[in-house]
Picture 1 (cartoon, rainbow, N blue to C red):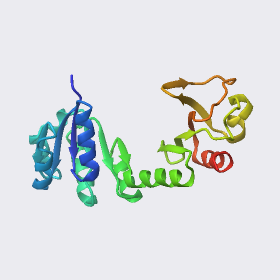
Picture 2 (picture 1 turned 90 degrees about the vertical axis):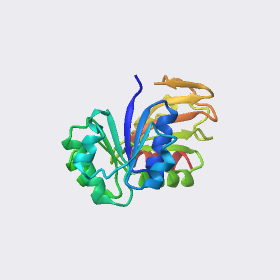
Picture 3 (picture 1 turned 180 degrees about the horizontal axis):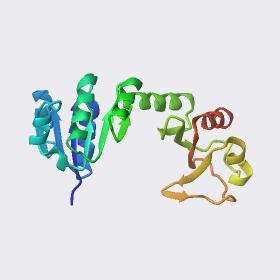
Length: 219
């Protein structure tokens, strides 16, 4: 069985989700109020519909409650985003992911029952800032308001040392949960494993601890 999704809002963010879900062989209903945007995705999505999703009757007529996951990617119109999310909850959609414009918007979305709230612009800004500050930071993902996971490339300060020798957990309060070495991924590496130059370390911890580690070991 193919997974089935609805994406509401076909701006840059919503459009990229539609393309990626289709690429991953999912069924996607793409919805927007703008007929030109819908036309753009008519040949890409499984189904593309012009609709006002703040109207409960419209949502019911489209059978959206039968889809397992709805992504609300409405851009600038915060009111439409909130009303759509509320309607989706009321008709019984199981999982709702919503794009937030700002922290106030996110608070409202959480209060009305969104299952996941994402901040694509803010998160991308954080990633870019980390990448600019250190050439060794390859990726950065916020797990919560206070915890993150990061991919870093081992530099001269790390290469040649064992994990127990570096004692990163005791010194910085972070954990190395995996090491990518070439095509291999070593999950939960042993304490006596020696880090090699060009290894990619996947670390997890609080933002404060990760920042401390970055400043001391990655610059």
